[in-house]
Image (cartoon, rainbow, N blue to C red; front, side, top):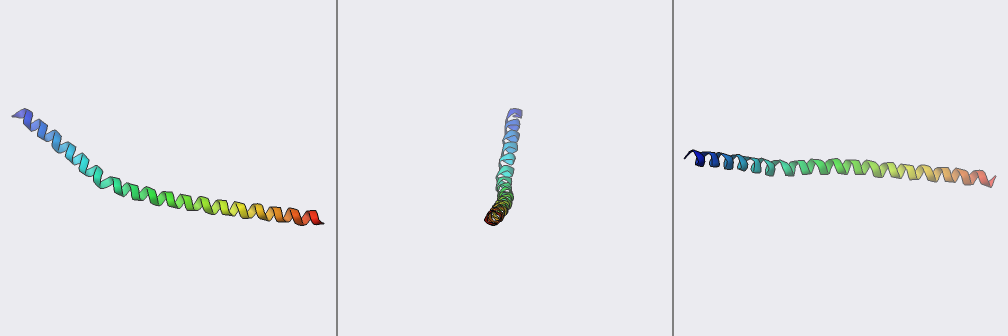
Amino acid sequence: MVVACIYMGMLLFLLIILISSAITIPTIKKILEIKYQAISKNILIHQHQQKNLISTVEKLRQLVKRY
């Protein structure tokens, strides 16, 4: 009888862990996706700014070489 209660308690504990994981994993996934998209957007903006800066420097070099 005592062994059966211990097994039931362990199963109940494992069920609680399973349910809490099932609830928290989708939420964490959404949070991580939002953070990833924000970081990705910042990187793309930074790369675009770097490309514009390089093209501006190249234009200045060409103008200087003409004279």
